[in-house]
Image 1 (cartoon, helix red, strand yellow):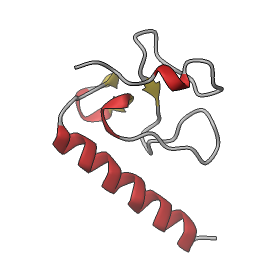
Image 2 (tube, helix red, strand yellow):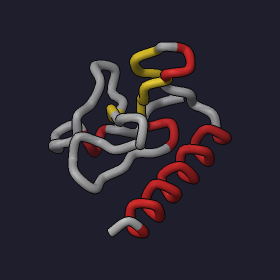
Image 3 (tube, one colour):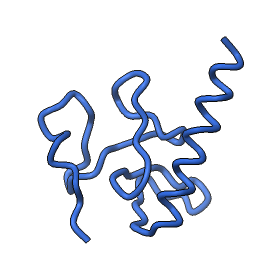
Image 4 (cartoon, one colour):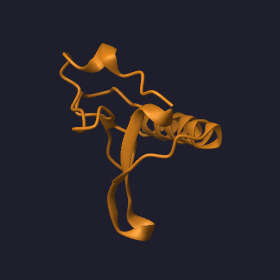
Length: 79
């Protein structure tokens, strides 16, 4: 499938050379308070000692959305 990241190419969000949004293990982008979920991002996969991976599957998109929601709720509860 085609990556729909054209909108972010001239933004301050850090992108990978192949057009994905680069995120950390908490799905945070290089811009504070901006998360990227779904098949538009590449993230570190520590379990396999991989730097950045992307999985273009609807279940992964749902999973990263849930992770982002949990991250936001936990962060809000600590402030």
